[in-house]
Every structure is written in structure tokens, then in C-alpha cells.
Length: 162
Image (cartoon, rainbow, N blue to C red; front, side):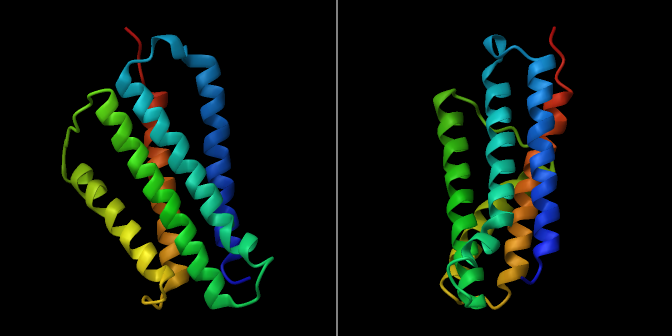
């Protein structure tokens, strides 16, 4: 399958990030004394990294049921779009539940807030067949989810308890 090496590499990075997260949690943190900010960071780390892992494997999984390449990539974009939307919704729900207000500390935070919803929309439009670059969009979506997971992992391992 086209792009399977790249997608498998992204899946391995996602799996490695999840594995290291488990080690860090076991060695560094006690879940009993996490504040709400730490809980939402951990949630974002795990959900986005899992989305990257599953999203990178979707084309191969779907190809078991069909040989129609166009359909495979459309369904893969639909799948990652649904997972990304679920992640986004769960983070918003958790933020509202714990009364966490977003703090935009720079251009990166603002861009992250814009890029996520834009990619969700693009994945759904691609699933409908209106965007020709299905493979590229899927790789960008998986990479974006992996980026969020890894950036949250880096914040996660740098937490200092006082």
C-alpha cells in the first residue's frame, strides 16, 4: 500500500510515546495528587497519541475489506476526522467540567486552536470526496495528533511537584 512505510513509522512513534508515558506515570507521578491542569494534559497526551496510532493504521485495516484505493483513503480520513472530533470534544468537556480557562501564551497556542478544527473539517470534506489530496491530508492529520501528544508528553515529563 502507498505510504505504508511512513504511516507505520508514525504508528511506531505514537506507540513509543505511549509506552514512555506509562513509564513516566509509574515512576514520577501519583494520580491521587494531580491537579485539574495535569489531568487535562494527560488526557490530551493519551487521546491524541492513540488517535495518531490508530489513524496511521486505518488505511491498512480498511484495505483488508476493499481494494478501492480512493475509498480506502476517504474512509481513513473519515475515521481520523471522527477520532479527532471526539478528542477535541472530550478536551472541551473536561475543561468545562474542571473550570479550566484556556491560556493563550503565544502564536503557537492560537495556531493550535485554529489548526485542530480546520483539520477536522478538512477530513470530513475529504471523506466526502471533495478534496483530491487524501493521502497527504491523512498524513498531516496523523502528524498533527502526534505533535500534540509529544508536546504534551514533554510538558508532562517536566512537571515539578512542590
